[in-house]
Image (cartoon, rainbow, N blue to C red; front, side, top):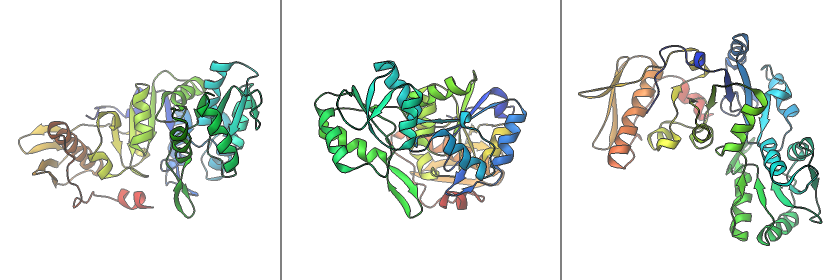
Length: 339
């Protein structure tokens, strides 16, 4: 269930790890208020990290995009799945190892930074690494897949099945990973969220003893926080919405929920069990005959805390997901999530 914080949640943490799309920006625009909140964290001497599964861009490119959107950032604030993949390969094969590359500039730069040698020919390669790269050729994929089937180790930057594009959601790198691994009959070693390597890499590079993960996706950001045993804050400005929360099993449940990043600077009360369900801040909610029912009035974030708690209690007790199809959450976060 949700965790309680009587003080502003950020007071318990010295490192705040931000997912990017859906948390810091949506498409080509910064989410309202993000820049000021990042500055508040820096002013409070908190470490700030921007964590991305996208392996195609270098940290310098990501930082420049953030600066262009008005969010202060330098390359050392950015940690990518490409960097996490490179560390896995360095630890397994050592400095100077040749790595067959399927990916873009960000992955190549990460390998070189780690003193590995990215190659396009399999001669002498000791492993294959792949990441999102729109210019990766099918003949190179076929060759790599054949080598992996023959026993060459395979590291994947991430397994995201979709990526946002100007023309809508498109197949992500996870589609390629699935194709290769199904053909080869093996599993990839995955560096990105929700697996541990990217989260560990972030703490190692940016510093901090008490991390907090902030994200908009349950299946990468929140699950990734669970993987390394740190708390998470789910913000409702991106992908995950009520249907996702209602179906969340324990490893997908955030520690805290907030409509926006302002939740970093606020206390987080938790619902208490009452005769009519769970109650908090003027809201009461329960699952009746399989449907979520919430009544009352109050703060929007308290509504979400009641809804999540009631749905999770029902899921744990019955094994079935509460019907939320006719439940309308309060407040403007709904419009943000639909963008």
